[in-house]
Image (cartoon, rainbow, N blue to C red; front, side, top):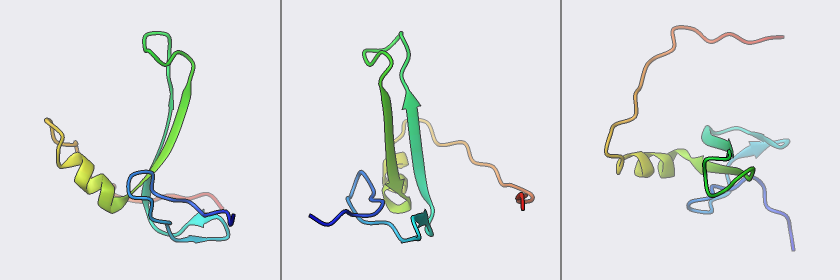
Length: 76
């Protein structure tokens, strides 16, 4: 079976990558669960494409807080 690239965990669509690096934006989540959960010490990771993210947050009881960045810095 051929290995797929990075896929959205919600819709299953393969995201655009180049040399293993995402070339379209997506939400990448990594959660390390602690002792006050039913998932003690489990680590969950998933990727959600922008379209699925928009659908997901549209159902939130409280809206997502949004702000704008003024500049983008990078290291060379």
